Image (tube, rainbow, N blue to C red; front, side, top):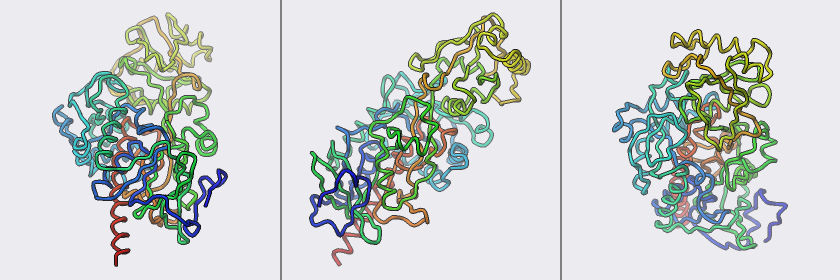
Length: 497
């Protein structure tokens, strides 16, 4: 049979299949970190794995990342740097980071398994130098490993979870270590015999009359092929950040931004899941950040909105600050600094100097703000900062300094111009075994998903920390691979009876 373009994303009935063009135990769609880890685990379990990637090679959005994975609970690298981090601290932090939309079962599973996950990554060939960077940075430009990658030391997180750095960056000199991470995972998957097909787009899931998934329709070289999967299909296709229609429908606030982070993240896996009755959750959630440090001295400044009001404690993770910035009135926010802490943010951030003055009244006037709005905010902050306090937003003492050294400046973050990179966080609802749920809580037999095609550990953009997405992709990608391989074994055993 032939499937037309108009039916892409709709299920293909098993009863309509009169031939199989390929057969495997586990069929994986997408060759980013989630797909790669799923392939490795399934192959190590003895499953025959076929992996289909729409692009020309492995990587996806994972290869565009910094190669940083959020790990804790007392990894060898944390301990060597002198940090105490136990499972409950990691769990409590992830719970807070997920906010009201947190998946407690996934958080508990990841917290309990984080140390083993670190060991697993190392066994696959992921290399860590093991060194620690104390400065507040976005990602290392050196080949160092351990960084503060979230809001661990910031209020309110520090009140419920003992702070510890948890960003573990692959050993790579310069930014963009995600490419090396993917190279390592790709090589491991291929070494295990995974059958990889690039430039191959999965179009439809093949389902029986009871809704169980038996394979997928895949387009290769302009021809549609019908591939059977005895254990199941794993959707590891990424989010929907490159699909304007889905963004408009589910996450319209992202349309104010102009720098999506993705490769083939067109929502195809989510749509295929929905087509067979899957539940999608938290589709409005997204991460956005305009990296505004280093230099770390800028954290001692204060953020204000166009009304001259503070809205966040500035020692929070850069993405948390920027997600809150997007909620402010108007289309811009400002970081106020004095001469002692002034520094240029990273050039790629597209953050401009909007005003300079010898007094805060001068800056207020140059910004065209209501007289007394900005100055009252700075006066209140400076009065408490002189005592090392911030009763309004609870910034940690080490980042507090009165802004009293002229000249003064306002750095402008312009929504729609500055580099507010973003990615989607909502997706298919899955279990800790990466089984895909229906809205009624039942699982769809033979269907699994992992990574940004699902809603996982980073369930909320306001609580995101660097490395959470790769943590989610790699850890639950592994779960999907194991579960699908186990189901393939059970299916084969039944066929032999």
